[in-house]
Image 1 (cartoon, rainbow over the protein chains, first blue to last red):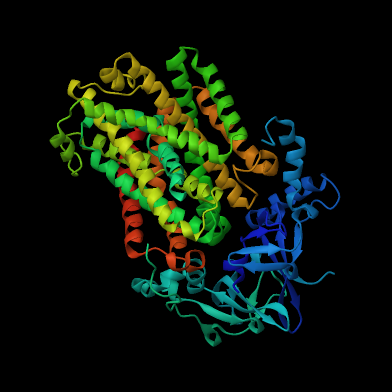
Image 2 (tube, chains in turn purple, blue, green; image 1 turned 60 degrees about the vertical axis):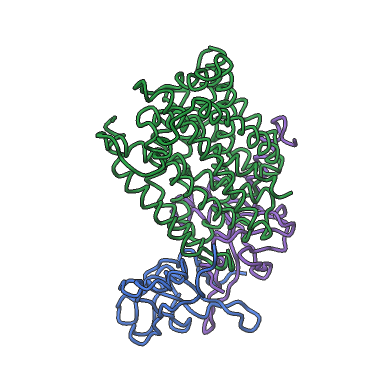
Length: 120
Length: 114
Length: 403
């Protein structure tokens, strides 16, 4: 498996097969005398921004922290919870139990659900 | 559980130097295999040839590609020979001449039918 | 039956070939050069048909829309560049189409243009919010067939078919070669708009295409884009018959009704309004959705016009915000037709930028299995991109100096 070509930026789906963002980052565990181990994937605007500008990522994290407990840090999914299906990665976790869709949930509650026709 | 970590998205594109301070190339890919039940990085692919292989494997079939110097440079570096003590400055612990070169070979069959 | 999904191909083509900017541009091309530029439209049709077939193939085989796959394949940096470039050009075109809808309403009602822009925004937002993708496709895809009235009018005016046929052979019969090149670039850019193919492939995912749709995709791409091209040619021929002999130059939408009133009298005016209205609204929906699809796919969000907005809040808010943002251009008074001309030229010039990641994808067996491009498709893509870029290098300076 090739990490950059096949894992980084791959679409992630959750246990209910819903699109749940992309793999924005990959965390390797460094071990003395052993090869680096694939530990986590990260799904987060903080991680994505850090690829562009670390300063922007820190700024975003600072503001995200204000939105609640557990916010302000990248969401990490253990690699052991991931299976590969072609070019798509599927995690055996419901995205709603993670902060991955926090922004989407907030937008739905605060804006979308107040507009008529949102349920069709 | 805290551990020493490195982020692949930040390693990507990092310029690696060998033990003599010579430039080996930019890190373009990390090869992973399952060892003792764990997914571990076994190789680091470095240089222009590695980039071509990662982005557009079909281009390896183009006859003129081998004449472009950039695409001929590439190394497969074993994990043993990469020092990630400082992940923001990864380095190769052997001389460049001792590293395994990558060669651009046709990695796929002929193009399919449209 | 799968073939009824032809509406997807038609809707994609309508938005690409016969939105208001393309209509006025085609009319201006016919009025200025007669039939001389017909061959350019054909080149554009061939190009967009090949592109559409490829994008539909990606969707059917990989079950991902084309930008989704490109983003994954070429990574963050290149994906972001493609996204930003496409958004800038498409936002201009979206603004032009919203302006086009307001123009239609103005022709109909005579009410102040700026108020009608607001009405157009409300109408579009309402439709995209409340109507599912399936119904948008049916209404505006099949509704776009009313534009065939331009072909009927052209036939009724009995053109010299020999002269028309000569227009399909590339030739330059004018001393104003720079203006000719400028129109050629614009017509190519009008035919080869990226949002058409992003919309088409995303639509294929909305329709849940799989590998069994490979042959259907070819038929839909060819028929839909072929029909769009036929409509575009009809408008050009009609303009060549009505305006060219009199040396009338066309640069304002108010001249459009004359195309049909010449043949049908007063009812021709209503036919122009109806066909323009459907074409503009269809194009607006297509571009707005295409823009939102790209953003959602770029970030891996949940998306789908067949989903109610509450189930894909970020996607729904993206197209809403983009419609409003694009409207700002026309509300402040930017001429929608000028916007279209600029976006068409930029599209042509930017084609090679988007082509390289696209070609990478089309030759990648991980996504397409045994259905990767053959040499013909690769050659067509490269040739048309190169042609568009070369012409644009000539024409864009002309555009900038107001030629």
